[in-house]
Length: 287
Image (cartoon, rainbow, N blue to C red; front, side, top):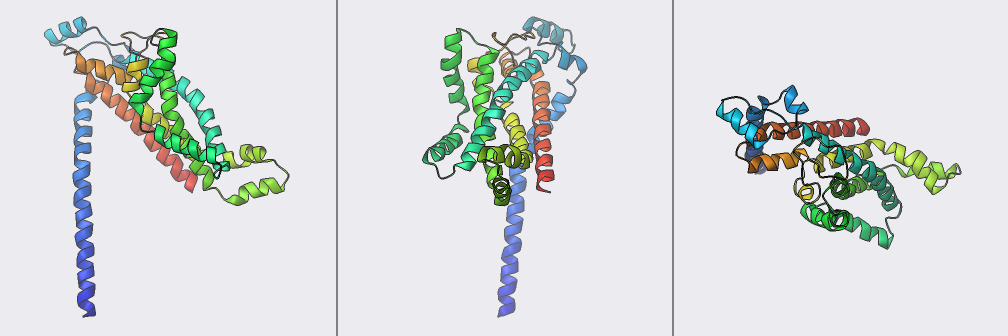
């Protein structure tokens, strides 16, 4: 009787294991299909000129297609715009998010801190609304689209991820770190700045990288704020391009649709690099 029960349990375990494996494969198939399609169709477009030249006009692209030539130009204007807006957003979001996360970790029982923590979670899932709000807050008062407005939208999107990663990392630190600093005469602020934050640096940096990879592919908020630009621009008070915006523009222009694959592959590789770096840092930090 006991052997029959054991065999039945083992059979159920194997059946469950195979079910999970089959479902995992079915879940991963669409992802691998998309990755393969982007890689195959976008790899041939990757070249030096693709990264250093701005987007061609529809007329140039049409003439190149008629003559059987590769479409000239590239996505340099989108790369420049993405880096400018991402840099400004990160410069504001990283210190603000770390300070806010540290405050939430130190005041877990505070009612106001609990409300802020809830709003932080709520803010993570509303990218389109953030674009509209930023349009009202920044674009309308400035009377025009700009890199500043785009960076504000990215800042609002990055902030909750950095806050949450900082808060959770500080929560799992040994209490003895803080107690030792306080026992040596340091105040709470000094203990946080000199002991707790340096100890949590690996987890915080991982959160920053994940926040960056999260917002770099956003299109909707930038449509309401940065608008886009067909040439390389460095002025932050004027409309500026970004790689996600270029992908949307390529999709709407039949003459430029072929460039979608190269731009998508660049964005995919960039996000993949950031995520792998974050995982590597998280692994080293745990060790």
